[in-house]
Image (cartoon, rainbow, N blue to C red):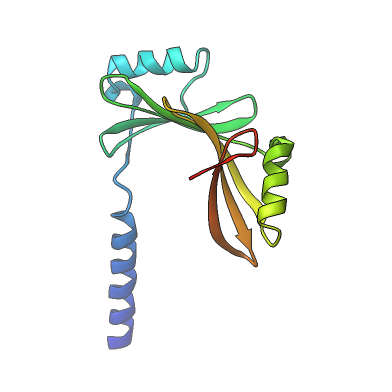
Length: 147
């Protein structure tokens, strides 16, 4: 009985700890400020947000566009912060895949996103080796890495 209680407590603490890692909470569109909704429509015309979240002082909308999932963040005043869109590996420019093949020959691209910010746009790649995700790479479409 004591062992079961310890196991139950450990499981509760693990769930509580991981639940506290993400400050974002799902919210209905009715709780999103009008200027944020308007900014979404201007940023992604004709796209309907699938879900809204609020966290870390930002509003995030998940969307689906042309077969790709994405997320877009806005400040409460409607200022666009960034957009991330999933990219299929075969859709990456040759310059990007060539850079990875040359500079990380023992890795493969596990995940790719197209990231747009007010400052720049780039691919965010997750490189995997032997089943471990161990490299994150930001790279421009021309194959030039960003530090």
